[in-house]
Length: 409
Ligand code: GP9
Ligand code: MN
Image 1 (tube, rainbow, N blue to C red):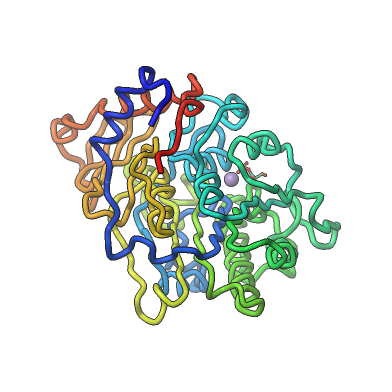
Image 2 (image 1 turned 180 degrees about the vertical axis):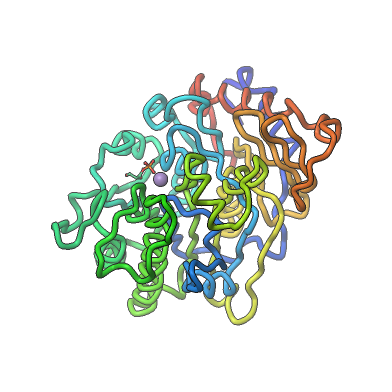
């Protein structure tokens, strides 16, 4: 599929050899629907189905995921580019860079993004985020990703009353977004990014739907309240989609971008979990939720929780296949999570990895399911395997090699 194939032969061979064909049972289940993709700021998976002082932290999501495909072992793979790295992974199924943010360093590259694939199939594409448009260089990078329109802070009514912390609160963000969304030409793809659950997790008293946690760490204490608020915002948003008759014709996808509580908050976290936090636990705190909701398909008792070990890199092919779009010739490093040939092996820049059986971190090998530390030799066959994949992915970014890509029809 390359005009200048010489630069990419190894990479393409690697990608072809590892291609995971779609699962016939799932392929095209959301064909022709609007795609509403929501990036959930700093939302880790441990809050799901958990309680804090007896109260559910995500009561709405806990119900919603029963009516969805939910991936309970999905690890984020972001680096210094944080939210933007998550966006990059999801759009392109390429790995963000080892250092810096690819949104800044390679914003004039050609990408064959999710947005572009959908646009090729007749979709109108837009991104919505109530922050300054140049944050993370989005105003430039979004052109390369190919969103036809970026609704940033200037598209929203932002006042001191409806703001907190980083800006517009999530509830008014979704409310105002609905007015924009309902006017878009259909089918559409909108990528929305929440903001309230961002460090340092500030919230007005009237928006606190649960009490703060009671450790010595005010950041961790507040985190629970902003996650609870975000949950409420999503609940209201889904209701609005129903009110506006947008719900039935859409596929709604929610994913956490990266962790919100860093390793600097171990004491409060071990108080919360009532146990010492080991490197194994730290690794698993890198899990974020992925919820794929297809009205009429995944609801009415047909939701499925998938416990396979997966990564953010896999979201793009999974969504495209659900939407009935082939990715056989795409240059992507993720695999369709619903494919029968999906291989559980998630890699990270610092050499850590996790497979169905093992978890490798801090030069220790653990059994993934139990956290039992085992002889490093058990992990040996996988150690270092990631470097070749990152080399291929980086080569594409550094060489801007997708400019040679021509989609085969
Ligand atoms: C800012 C928001 C937060 O617009 O996406 O970015 P983060 O600090 O999480 O990367
Ligand atoms: Mn973020």
